[in-house]
Image 1 (tube, each protein chain N blue to C red):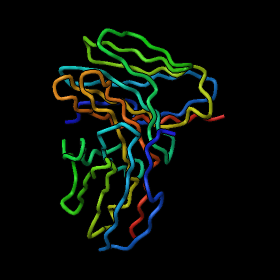
Image 2: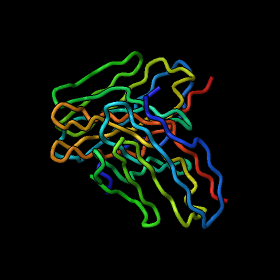
Image 3: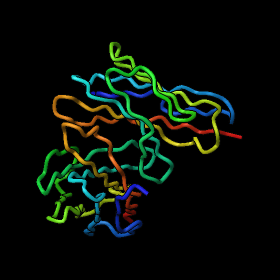
Length: 116
Length: 112
């Protein structure tokens, strides 16, 4: 158990709909990352938050947005869903203390999104 | 162009055999390199971390090497087991901005 919790584990929805994925980081971790993994593909970095602020942005579509709340949990919002958005969405957390942090990411078990 | 390239993309080996995965990177300046194991449908888990001063590090049947001069790392799996079937991902951290660069992964299939 990595200590990172993601909900829901599975989600089936229709094209055009909107969904919200939730992530609770490990206790004490300030940084949250979101990744998308399509079938048989590598992990694609979407976005990173650190202590409530957006720190880095990757290949995140404009239809997608995220935020990190004061209690450090994060939500990834996916709207106007398309068939191609079907994927595993992983959340990861890290200490992100820079000076002594080795950069290890602790991943949740993922949320599997199926768009029909 | 991806700053971390892994090879091969996939491989199949018989149980009990050894295999070696490669990771070449261009990330500079280099902070560390980490190998993750990702079981199908699960989140990746760190296997080992290599820093600039380390050449070899073992974690059970997994041995990682690093050549910081040529910017290459390898992950050797000894006496493979069925449970080694997974994707192995190389992640390199920049010392400049602490950004993480991911390789696409190598999928290993171990057959009985």
